[in-house]
Length: 349
Ligand code: IPM
Ligand code: MN
Image (cartoon, rainbow, N blue to C red):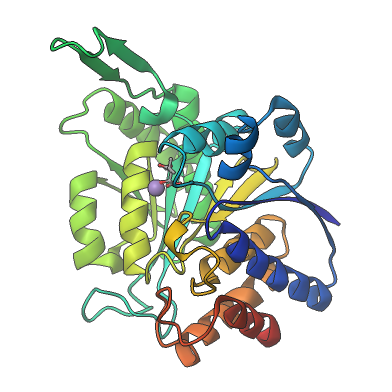
């Protein structure tokens, strides 16, 4: 029995989550496990009504779950940054979800904008540090709203934070890497403090993983190669900001926001899983968005919980839906409604 907290959130979040839970139920019947699901009405609506984003009491309750399943956060009537900081980043920081795991896998039949590349070429994982760096909130304004204003945003990189992220990436590569190849993504030619620390710790850990081929690349070069030679990559490990950016590039080459999912992990503790697409308010309630990203987030969640058979079956069913049923992964162009796509995956399971 797994305890799952569900936060449908804003915009298309509730539709996405509904389809993910449909597939979760189908997986439960087939693979003989059970979940207890508790809904939380966090998000833009609650904030506008009550001013609450993530009350301490709720945060404490969340700690008692095995996993959290999130739809999307972001409301057109709430200034950008408020809900993201108050909910998403607060959960990441307070639950110490120090890894953001982003698989970039092109499933068969899915369109990639990269010419002459197929599923055998695009299959890697981005391991993003998720609690430090430029996201730590260090900095501030000086002389705000004057012509001499100063805005400082510092990148915080602790030895502890860097090391645990790198160790996770090495372990992940050892256990799951297809090529046993780990690439450190940084910017040692310009960010001579932060990237230097990352590189030193990377080189210190390397000898303990002799079977892993290690290399380093600058983040800008990684952006070129993810497009030109995506097959070079197996596991990429990087800091919070670089990871944020290259994960979206990764999402596009694997078929877009309709399919990309992520895990925010504190290994062994409550961890959070979400589609990465955002709340897409203009599509909300229209039954046109693609729920596969959200279904893939359920697969990642089950894999995390140790239900690997169920996770693999969901991924296989999603692959089949992509290759033989959907016209496109884009919202409104699938040839089916949101709920019909969820039904297909659940039936295939
Ligand atoms: C992501 C998102 C968030 C981030 C935003 C919503 C704060 O882009 O999960 O990648 O930048 O981490
Ligand atoms: Mn992002």
